Length: 204
Image (cartoon, one colour):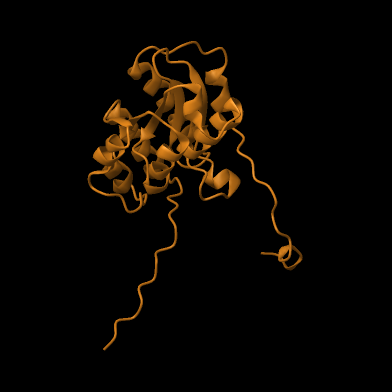
């Protein structure tokens, strides 16, 4: 950090989708089946790789029943330097802005479609945001296989979400979603993870 910046405390942060992420959303009508909704999300995830924009992840929120898009997100961690700017978080934040409420469930049941199973952070955001259903493409192990740290997640996390009233649907477009992750890694994409937590020294 430069000396003249040491005492400057940031007071704002914003999530702005790049044009290549918004153009597929222009004039988008209802997507009535889950495969079509996932296809859109994977298109956005693949675009992050093609545009060297950062993590190969994307997500979107849709109204359950009629498949109308509410908001979409791509990973903006590198672009914003905000470690929490995962695609799911970006989509949820933009949905709250559009709907004018922190409780997205007030707009009716919403489905979050994500190119990869949520990491520990994003999984925690689902009940707080009021999401009713989460649809996943790649699995946790697909992300870990290319080097991403998905955090400490309970092995039975889908059942735990279901116990909170959140439906979980896995493996929709998994093969294509996992290939996007591999393509990013093979192409030299930045694999960003938090610092490892140092273990205290053992007492002798």
